[in-house]
Length: 160
Image 1 (cartoon, rainbow, N blue to C red):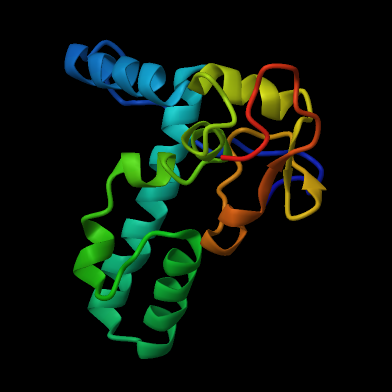
Image 2 (cartoon, rainbow, N blue to C red; image 1 turned 180 degrees about the horizontal axis):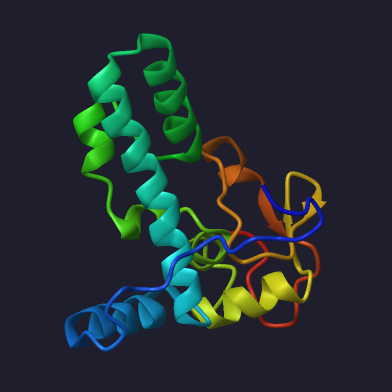
């Protein structure tokens, strides 16, 4: 079980570390979503993998209550799903689009995705009256409209 104070890895490294196709895809994701290192891609892949595993297990069991809970969780996150096949069709980009860093950039608070990351890490972004310092925070759909800048540096728009 492990020690309760010791954190575990939230990702798995790829089995083939020098696969050129995978490396090229990861580089494109790093660039387009402003990720800092490939570990963030691997962590998002593990989140996606967990959703898919849960969906496959529910397909085998036909548990209506647990299906509803999984659909509610994904819909609350902003990923619309109505049946289990939709969960299996979710892509990595769908989850990366729900990150705070991406949403700050899409709202127009930042000039680039990297600038959005810097604003978040420096404590300039507030979500629902709480300062969030993690660019990887997955923003629920309800809180998407409650993203504001705490301190607007000169020359930037105050609202999106």
